[in-house]
Length: 474
Image (tube, rainbow, N blue to C red; front, side, top):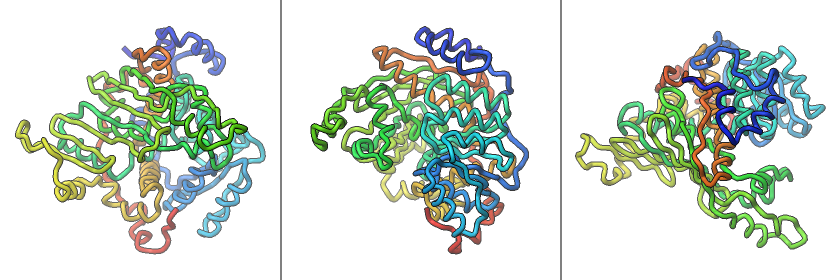
């Protein structure tokens, strides 16, 4: 049976207080949405996509630089409270011979004044996380589509608010998970859709990234990352490895997340780093962390699949997203190195060892995703985490320009973002199983599965740009 926001909040005992709080945020209290389902939602083709950027920092400025190079995309407005950041974007556009963008940022909520205008169609949001939900809802309520950095939002009430705003206003709200567009992640997706790995039944993914120095010495002097460790349990950055795996499992399109259990190690590495690197007079020397070094969550889907999801930014270790998929015919992994094997015939024993490097490379070339086949050269030239950022932007721009559904819809944004709060609830309940809300209200049962789509790169006129100096690396 379809589950409404009200049903979920009422049926979950530990959410009683949250349900009361939600009533103070949503007009009319906690209630089911009044809009129409967003699966497969499209808008008429947009010949020119006018974009307003909110947040021109470490993620926002490269986005301005990348997207301004996509034919048919226009940087119409930029907003940041730091004048120096606006200047960087302004100078880039001028150097590239692009029209100047209208600038906002006189006050902390000047982004609202920007959204009030009719000067652009899409908000690209790369702001601090507390602003994600307010920007999502306000922008859609004012007629804008939204492209939101990860995680989309930070708690269950914000998930519902964002879903309901999208349904109410009939506007796209896409979570910008760039790793879903990585070359190896899309290779895995193509292998899955071609049936080479059989049915995917289990995945091991996550985000492991030594951030001790970054969190104790933030570039901008704002300690928002480490504050989460001082006050909360759980996985607060779940999407990099999980969204690509979820696409391979058709999450929200034939299957959905059912429940999770989550647990953590003790806190040790962060506190040791602080003690060893700062004097006793500095608060960082003796700062105590609530969150453990490593959070591990196990997710089970309604269809019987499982996912092991790890988050670790505390210990000294190489970067990894895990990227392991196990199917009924074979296995794929991309970290710490790309390896693959699958059976030619079920039970023939050929998958007892990974394929030799030469054969694995042949498979990589043969099953390279169409996006990377047609746009990989220009993507690597423009850049953005090896080109995946540009592939991501190219894809959503292509969809809007051709009236196609976006790859990641608002239900995906809410589902993956839910893990932030659900994992904390599980840790606080001695790893009790916690149910996922069904934001689709049963729509996942009939929604069309993901497919391997082609991109007609000729529509973007990149055939000439890729061969010229016009594509600027960022």
